[in-house]
Length: 451
Image (cartoon, rainbow, N blue to C red; front, side):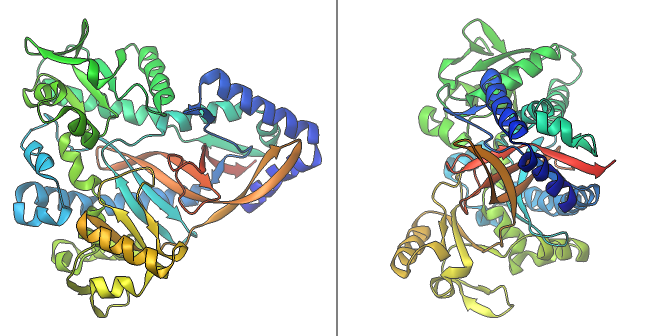
């Protein structure tokens, strides 16, 4: 793969007109397609992410090997209230667990956040089972790159294969809807549900166009415009039967409470919502703590334990207790955390976009102490530091080609909790590799092989 990257960069370096034309094409295409996060383009570099077929197979196999362990913890949590306390759900979230979504999987569409450190080291740091974003952006960017001059030149010597993610999202929605409606066969009436002012609104438009092109009735709907009347969830005159839920459950409850029309409609079985309220169990950062905690080892097979130890970084809910450190020694968690900040990350149990995360090696002792103290008051997890991989990516700035090392993550999408479909890549010069955090960029992911 290094040869492919070098070849791509050499094309840009040897022909300034090609680089400038490609930058102009990238900027214009994103503007035309509305590929924006708020007011900024979602991609700022001229090269996509390349994976070899071997790397992609390793990614697929690893995801497949981890998913049964996540399913086990979900199944046990749903039926065992004492075990479920490890996930630190809120009272509202506990109340909503009784609602049967009408389909088997709590999260028919989900996404791992991981780091492909090397061909042997792949570490999964989060599991977004509630509102996995980015599939529309990634697919649209792949189409944009096919139209860029440098990418066309690159294909003279290399085969490239996109990894589409939108079809997996649609399959998850339609499959869940069919389970929910049972023996009837009415087509769904989809609502892409989130606040109209969110910076990811442009991705809702991508999915709106995609669903319409597939012959499905759809609207983009703000939760504030919903009503539950006469046994139907309505947005004005639009009867919603399937929700593609992009709004966060926490925000929906904070703004509308447990009696919000969406909650009432789902509770009454009047609408199918994907993903379900039960998705919160695995969405919690504590789900990785449950998987890596020595108290739960008896739940898993020998193969599952091997996969967990290899691919899930050491994670614990932040609290005062005895536990086992990454090196296998017995520790008092609070004291040990205070003394090991340079190897640790603190994360809120329920947040997104890098909000509230403290990277221990970036703060002083006083700041770390305050962060740990706050983590005892509001549920947080402490996680062992992951070595961040980096690659060089080219861009044109102020009329000059720059090739700069950027950190990158690898985020495979999962359908029905059982198999991988598509992959999102984000790059950044900041250790928080997250577009929402403000310092990142999305790039499309392609498989590559020499012709």
